[in-house]
Image (cartoon, rainbow, N blue to C red; front, side, top):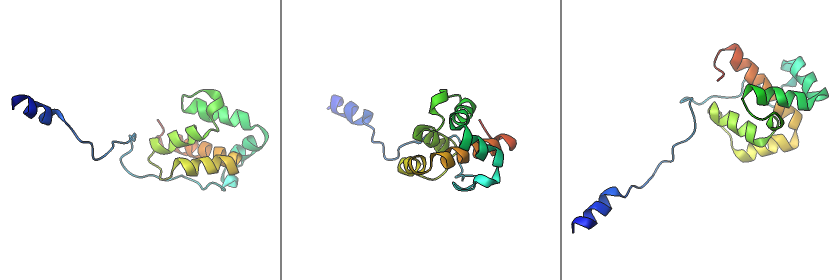
Length: 119
């Protein structure tokens, strides 16, 4: 009887999965996916030197340089700042318009650095 009580006492059922988010409040992208003209320098860099812009994004997030324009990088950023969306949405953004996706990410990083909320 005692062994059965110990077994039942140590069994835990997880009903809510904890998420990775240091930001408790929902956030949003500072600019839209197609708002490239809101920062022309980022847009020009993305258009003419996409790998350089990817490296800038990856370096800002302390990641490997070639990962800057990846779905994983976008998803990591989105979850870090509690921006609504899904991995599938990130995938389609990167697949359909990789330059716009990367530019949006860079603009958001720049904005959060300016606001001193980037970490």
